[in-house]
Image (cartoon, rainbow, N blue to C red):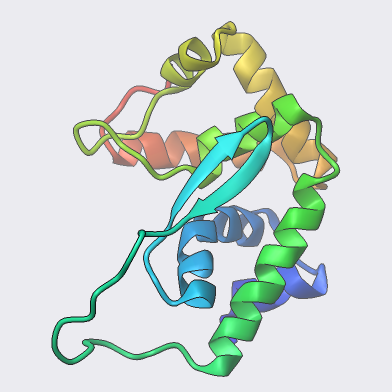
Length: 160
């Protein structure tokens, strides 16, 4: 088992573990389903979308996930789902768009301002929802803020 996933499953996670787990949600679903997936948010619920049909061409490259990998991924998905169910719809939106969604424009993540505009709310409202949801999950909003500042600055993109 990967250490941070094991800690999330057991409930003995720290903020870094939980951030990594949310940011890995797409990959975890891919392991469980055995295909590439896209995650979408509709009415506060996360939906997993798979290609209509996957055609395998030639030999597979890389390691195929084991049954243990699939079980660990599924257990982590279940744990994250239970945690997200404790949040309001608007809090789930903030977590999804800031931590789970991995879409980028011009290879750069969206800023808080862009996400707030997309949701039709003020940037401060978006940030408030994000941090209050993180605290509701049991995390430390200061550590989340530090992580986000580091990640967005690492991508050479303003946080505003």
